[in-house]
Length: 471
Image 1 (cartoon, helix red, strand yellow):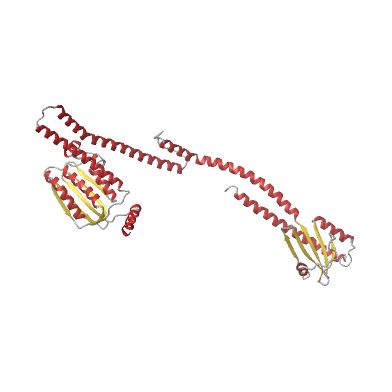
Image 2 (spheres, rainbow, N blue to C red; image 1 turned 135 degrees about the horizontal axis):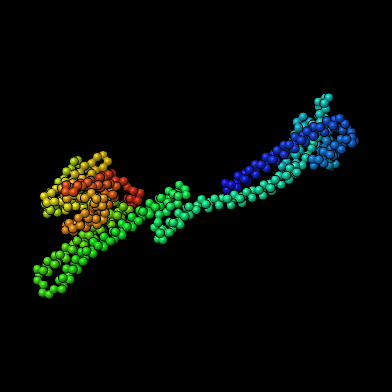
């Protein structure tokens, strides 16, 4: 369209310009000839005697040359000469003729009927009065025919140019979209699993940027897939281990006869421990799944006294701390209230504090500090425990990751506590970070906005709930 449409516009402009110019030239030419003819009519006294062969021949030649009609009208408005010999001797009264006697020459172009009409005054040079009028009608058929011929040639030219432009456009377009087609083919191959190779289409900056973005997406998808496979593998291993232990213990009992009641009791206690461990793993997995799904669901947000919430968490953890001979310390620097989901965030804080207690040393301590500024509140959990190696600190929030696997199994850890805590904190648009030194202790810092930001979907759900309550 960009190539062809200007051709049509140019054709219209050129043909109209030619027609306007040709009509203007013809008017000027005819007007000059009529002025000369008017002088000859006076010279030969044609208004009173129409027998002059010279003037008659000139009139016939003029009429034939310009394919027109000439009528000479005297001052009585009588037609004394008509080259078509139709109206000779008749009276003609029209606005144009009457105005011509007032020395006003007119030239009118009738585009529909294709002729130009002129009125030329015959002026007596002696008296300066108008003694007659020459009414001339000249055909513009030749001009119209020329325009038609030019239009046909222009059409042929436009068709040729249009075909060339179309072919050129198709060729250029095919070459321009080839890199995008290559990207699409590569994406389809990746989608169907034929290849995992990265896309490289360095033809344009745009295709290179698209390829780079897709490669980043592929890397992220591969990372997620590896994480999923690792998670499934870990879950299978963690769930299988207690079952294996239960089976071994049960087989041991079944393979013996006349086993004392004390042995049965001891074996059953071990089986119960393994079942409790299995139950804890399953419960932690369910908590983790609920936290993952809650990002899309409505959170139960309310204004909560953070100091009281942390104090309640410490009360629940205190029996574990007393058994481990670990002192719990609460430091409320200032009163803090915030918009949170109390159940989810208290679960996160409890998991962090439980870890601090379980991985502590005898007669150690865990200090929990609550503070806030105008925008965020922080919960800092510091302990005097064994610490976390520097190379392990980047992985502690991964599911089933354990720094000391033997000690974790000993104390009944599932490797999901910190993953649950991190998900709960992220749901509150907060952050959790760790600082640790081996043999010195570990400090976890949880930072949460005091005002919860409601997402579009949460807002929509809240609105629906409000409507139901009102109803």
